[in-house]
Every structure is written in structure tokens, then in C-alpha cells.
Length: 71
Image (cartoon, rainbow, N blue to C red):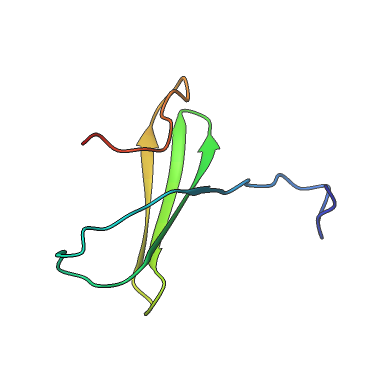
């Protein structure tokens, strides 16, 4: 894979599958991605409409999280 700065480390962001309940408070499509890093994952999320977004670190030392949530 060629990158503009190939001599520097690269974060690989993986798209997560998301869904929202139709009756939810916010009626907007939602995007979420994760990057596996030492000790866990960085998770970034945002609404497709507007500028609201967030970034969190999720501890997962063995990278066992499959990207889904518990229902």
C-alpha cells in the first residue's frame, strides 16, 4: 500500500456495521470505524449529517472484539 508518507506508521480504519432504531431520538445515518492499536481499539463515530463526532479508546488487549454490540 502506497501512502504519502510511507516511512511513517499508518492507522488502518475499519468500517463498522451500524444501525439505529427508527424510533430513536436522532434520525440520522451513523458512521463508525475502529483502528486496532496496542492494548485495544480507537473507535471514531459521527453522524452523516452535521459535524457531531466522537473518539474513544476501548481496552481490548487481545483484540477479541468483533465490532458488534451486545443486544
